Image (cartoon, rainbow, N blue to C red):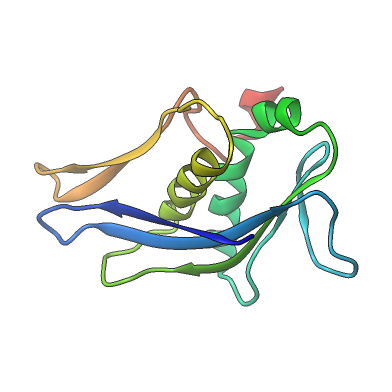
Amino acid sequence: MKHTYKYRLRSPMGGLAADLTAENLSDPLPDTYRLQIDRNLWLTPPVDINWRDSAWLSFGLSAHADALNRIHPGDLVIRVTALTFPMASFRSEVSALAMDGWLRTQFPLQDVGLRAEFNPSSHSYNFHWGNISNPFDDSQYF
């Protein structure tokens, strides 16, 4: 069954927002594009998604990969059917935050420290990725 999670961060600049609609499947849909995130963990992103949004969705899912593999040892496919950005400033990083929130509403997962905050002195947003300093730096994983 599909569920929608609404990520919201309000700020003096308006805020950040994303609505993510997804479902979890035990079996991959035949002939459906999917990205392997970890061992038996897969992501099927929405059609016509921007590559940056897809990368950050993947990161948001990968942050919970170990826990999801323990909870669900067989194949697990997270199929995102929609990622929309209602009336707010949007940055692709918000895709990871929306995925994190969606996952934690669907599975008994711990908070891994993914978050954003508004920085009033720079009038911008700071993103925090838990114990990962740079999500796309492979050297920290090896």
